Amino acid sequence: TLTAGVVAVQGDVSEHAAAIERAADAVGEDVAIREVREAGLVPDCDVLALPGGESTTISRLLAQSGIDEEIREHVAAGKPVLATCAGLIVASTDARDDRVDTLDVLDVSVERNAFGRQKDSFEASLSVDGLDEPYPAVFIRAPAIDEVDDGVEVLATVEGRPVAVREGPVVGLSFHPELTNDDRLHRLALFDALAAAT
Ligand code: GLN
Image 1: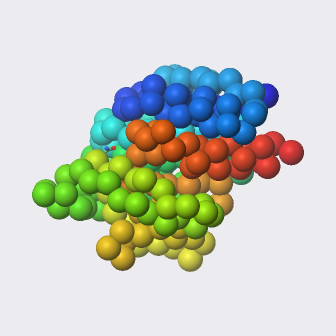
Image 2: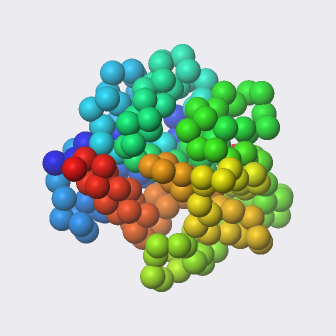
């Protein structure tokens, strides 16, 4: 049995929890899901989802609750994190915005709301490293990743800009894999968790 934590201080928490459940069914693994609203739960989690929402709010609540430090320890222990949209912004080392206190667990800088007004939200069929078929990616006021440290692998791009990256156990996505029925990226996070747990 794996324990999956969905960081639940703000954002699209229930959608991530549902996606993890579908992914668990698909891989035939027992997964207990915990919504993380306070410190003390992350140490029991094998894998974390850091949802989209509002990055300024999420980062403030993580710092106030002390969950921020627990996420850093989780990553330092090599356990996987799936950080999506605002979650990616929060996980990064630089959001170019003083109101976002980044976790510094993913060595990229991001530009918030990077895809222009007429493209506030859009869907793209993305080829993602590690997936056989294109992934239907939903972008909503999405960040772009503009600087990527040496240890960071770019998994997908839109208009030449990285939108999916991996550094060790942390996968960061500009888009929302929890908003489609395609749970392949959540499955990858569970496989990472199984590998890390052995
Ligand atoms: N624009 C939001 C932010 O900067 C992120 C958007 C999202 O998570 N859908 O926090």
